[in-house]
Image (cartoon, rainbow, N blue to C red; front, side, top):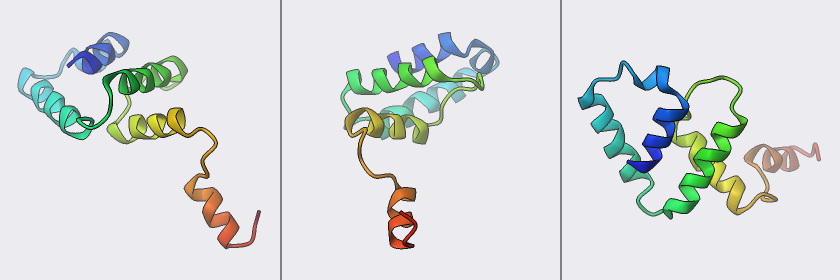
Length: 90
């Protein structure tokens, strides 16, 4: 709930028209999909996303999972890098 509270403050126009039941469902989904991730890491990923957002649209779960990956392994090879190696373009 604390993560979505950050998003509600950062993107008030998106969440203001959301029905209570929809918000509750959103909380449940985020809780389920981030249950194994430390709160501090998820919070840092969300804040990193918000700080660099240029679209003014809240992140989806996959974007935050990607931000977590970047925070925990910033030099890791991306999927595209791997395909480029396989295709012989690197």
